[in-house]
Length: 464
Image 1 (tube, rainbow, N blue to C red):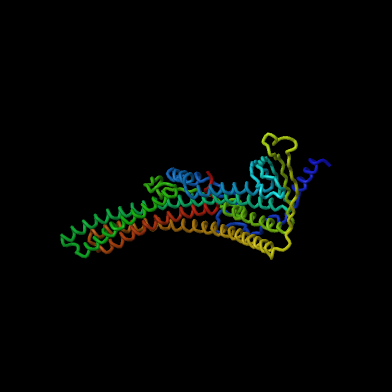
Image 2 (cartoon, rainbow, N blue to C red; image 1 turned 45 degrees about the vertical axis):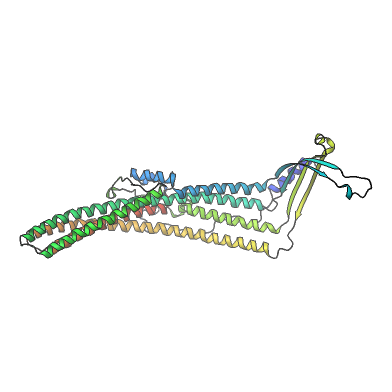
C-alpha cells in the first residue's frame, strides 16, 4: 500500500470511529391534550404564531417595539453571546483537524577553547540557520472531539434561543408598560373630571351656605373632596413619568416623553386560539434553549468517558538546517522527524471516574430543568387563559356598575339642588363614580395585560 493510501485509510477509520457516551434522546414529558380554560381547544392555529405587528395595532406602540428590538441592551448583549458561542464552536471543531505550523531560527555561538580536552584546540564561532514545518494530529478514535463539537454546537443553538427569549420578554414588557401609560392617562382624565365636578359642587355649596340653605359641615365636606382630587393628580403624574422612563430604558434611550396613540378603551386585540400544547415545545424559545442545554450536557458525558481510552497523537516535522545561509536549501541540509505518541491512563486516583460522574449528574440536572421548563410553560399559558377570561368578565361588569354610579350621582345632584337630600348623599355618589372609573381603567389594563401574557406564554412576539 502506498503512503497516500495508508493516510486515506487512516482518515476513513477516524471518520467512522465510534463515539463513546450516550446519543441524545429527548426525555419523556407529560403533555396535556388541551390547555385548561381554553375556549377554542383543539385548534391547530395559535395566537403565538402571529407576528407582533399583527397583534399590536397601535402605531405608537409599534414604533416603540421596533426601537426596542433594534436598540435594547439586553438583546444586544444576547447577540454578543451568540458570537461567543460561534467562536467557541470554531475553537472546539479545530481539534478534529491536523494542526500545522512553521518556524525559522538563526543562532550563533562561541565555544570556549579552555574547555577543549585536545591540547592546542582553540574555541570557534559557529552559526546555525534552520527552517522547519510541523504537523500534529490527535486522532479522535473515541469521538472525544466530535462529542465536544456536538456540545458546542448545542450551546450555540441555546444562545440563539436565549436571544429569542429576550425578544419575547422585551415585547411583552414594552406592551405592558405602554398600556400602563394609557391606563394612567385614563386615571388622570377621570381625576380631572372629578375635580372639575367637585369644584363646581363646592361653589354651589358655598352659595347655599351663604343663603342659609346648607351648613358649614357640607362646605367642609365639599372642600375635602376637592382637596383629595387635587392631591391625587401629582401622584398620577409621578407614576406616568416613571413609566415613561422605564419605556425609554427598554428602547435603549435616555428618559423622555412617550407619545401616545390609540386610547386604552379603544385598544383591540385579536382573539385567536391557543393552539395545541404539543406545539409549544417547538414555539417557545426557552424550551428549545433548555433542550439544547441538555444536548450539550449529554455530549459532555462522551467527552469525559473518552478519557478512559488511549490517546494517539501523530507528529511530523521537516525542514532544512545549515551553518551557512547559502546552503540552507541544498539536498544535504534536509532534516525530518515523524513519530506517534501513545498515552494510556493507568492510575488517576478516581479523577476520570469523578469527571464522568459529574457530567452524568449535570446531564440529569439538565433533564429535570428541561421538564420543569415545559411544565412552567404550560402553567403560564393556563394562568394567562384564566386571567383573560376572568378579567374580561370583570371589565364588562365594571362597565355596567360605573354607568349605574354615574346615573345615581346625577340623580343625587338633582335631589340635593332641590333640597330633597343632604350633601352626604352627593358625597357618597361622587366617591362611588370616581372609584368606579378608576377601577374600570385598571380592569381594562388587566384585560390587555392578560392578552400580552398569553401571547408571551405561547412564545410569540420575537419575530422581526
